[in-house]
Length: 381
Ligand code: UD1
Image 1 (cartoon, protein in one colour):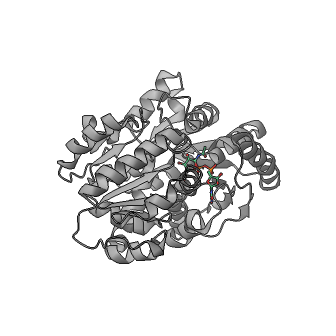
Image 2 (cartoon, rainbow, N blue to C red):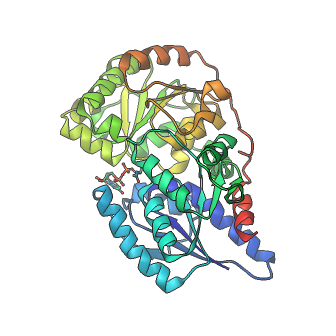
Image 3 (cartoon, protein in one colour):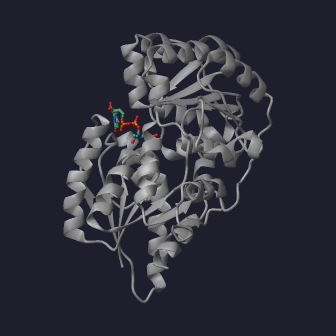
């Protein structure tokens, strides 16, 4: 059996790492080993967005890098399809495995379907219902075309059934990202918070306040086009965290490259970087982010993966989006998160409420650290 799996962008790496390990474990005793080929589309290419995760999570170097880089959606998807088709024709795998909802996921599942190669989607069935999000388009198309749909929770399986998906294509396996979280908690716990900050400080000339072990702090990430590509939205969020949150507790803001560019274009970056209690950080490595998340008083984010990690760690969080494809992480379902969108009056009210929450770890069913083995078993069977 030959499996070719695909990664492209940062949130894919923590999903593929445990899957590759599961193949390794299977091959130790298997009569017929699984042959595995790893393809990186090259959508994310900066060391901090890509290579650092390969090194830290023990992912073997990609066998093939398509080097598609940045561009418009059509450019990224089109260039990936053209390059990936050649790979499929050369390697002829039995299965293509795609994860998550980035442009690489869409491009490679469409190409596999057109070449008649079976495709397995890990993290299938998530739905925000918001077609304004590029990821929602990617999820819908990938799930419609994939042979095998491995879901992280029962509500995702239900979404697929509601769309008329045949039962035999759906398998509830749990959340593969939590395999990575569990495997890396110990290493992250051993890190030192002030050391993480000094290694990742965005602008070392700016004399920011010291934050260390045992201190209260808020943590933020932002990269969705709806928050960062709209200058008015970005300006109001930046003003809220600068003038309100950081007055109250220091705020650590890990900056995605897209956000840096937008803050710079909006003329906001210099002012924020000079603020003592608003501490700007470069994109964080996996263990650095995990450690900061383990001790944060509150997380403000628009990342889906961080919502899930906050839920399992028990970190109270605000999702600065009007909807989520991961409802299972919200307080209504036992999680620790509140959806706010980016209207600052709503964010402010939720921020005050959530600050009083106690850390309350919550694991939805099958978020147990053993999802990768179930994914492989589903493919092999
Ligand atoms: C992509 C995913 C998104 C995911 C996010 C995590 C899609 C549609 N979006 O969004 O779902 O949550 O990754 O990061 O696939 N850039 C760099 N260095 C890099 C990569 C990007 O500087 O290594 C900059 C470029 O200016 C680029 C911009 O970031 O144009 C955006 O990158 P892109 O891959 O288009 O989308 P993300 O916003 O990262």
